[in-house]
Image 1 (cartoon, rainbow, N blue to C red):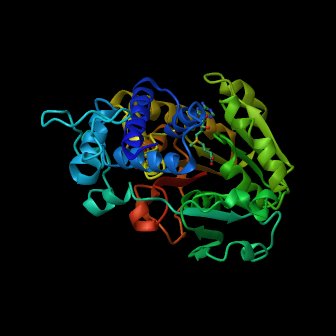
Image 2 (cartoon, protein in one colour; image 1 turned 45 degrees about the vertical axis):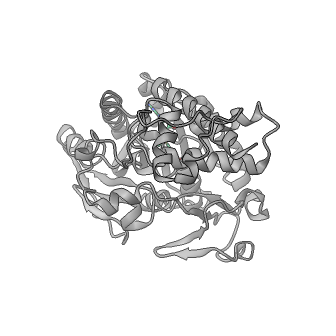
Length: 393
Ligand SMILES: C[S@@+](CC[C@H](N)C(=O)[O-])C[C@H]1O[C@@H](n2cnc3c(N)ncnc32)[C@H](O)[C@@H]1O
């Protein structure tokens, strides 16, 4: 591909990403993979160049651009060498005209700014879009501390997380023997901190209510040393169905899975009522804390969607609470930084459910935020999260 053709390819993929963000379609990575699957002539260098270019355009634009060309034209304003590739060549984009639409550079969509109560400094907002490192969790069900570190000489340990290792972005971890044999899992340090805050112990009954493909379930399984009852639930079959294979690789054979029916969760969960020492609610959320990994998520979020998420989180918390045994704990987490999904959600929960008290966290990273803890890329070097631990009377 010529350099100009790569720019046009980036514009074409951006068009698809913009439409998917508007209509609830597939993630950017899926669209990129599909695009190149249908264009085998593109070599690995072409693919990398197109991908880098389009992600640069996505990162610099907080609000959904009119189309791919406007997104790329915005980037070209800052890069004369890119502007020169709008050359009208046979596979390249048409030359730029002064009145061509070009998206403005910004980090946080204007309507979300006032909702990020604890993140008002420019530097903190900037960090939401910086490239994310690659964090590993050593799986103590399979590997003793230090056993597999020889495979990751460039890894650095992380303060406060004895089983974590930080690698440079893009490290091909899935090609290592340690990953293939389940000795390590890829997991952001923030997720590891939340799993640790659950304080799961061997022999406990633990329910991971929004388990997805089981990232935190596997960390809980390791903390439980494979003993006790660990139930992973989710309302989406395609996510939960990925867990058994991961659990097998991780040697976490005692995990049970329970597929819930959205809106009818209580029926399926009835046998577990009052049984859990810990219920983790890693709730569906706006993902404002993971923009550095999914920058196009900013284009998907609308005030209406946020409102729907906030009420779904409240509904999930309401059916999670009765699962907890007296004296047990409910851990609520979101990879989101809006007050409504974090401290505001928990204030409302406590007002609806007397008898729950927040447990003070002694985990060093993070800042206190209402009754819970806020983790951010700038402050903690993690994805952005809010979490809280609540104890049942
Ligand atoms: C933030 S993700 C969970 C990520 C996962 N815990 C991990 O560590 O990888 C939120 C999950 O909540 C699930 N979910 C959404 N609505 C739900 C409901 N009503 N009951 C249970 N799970 C639900 C979604 O399918 C999604 O997998």
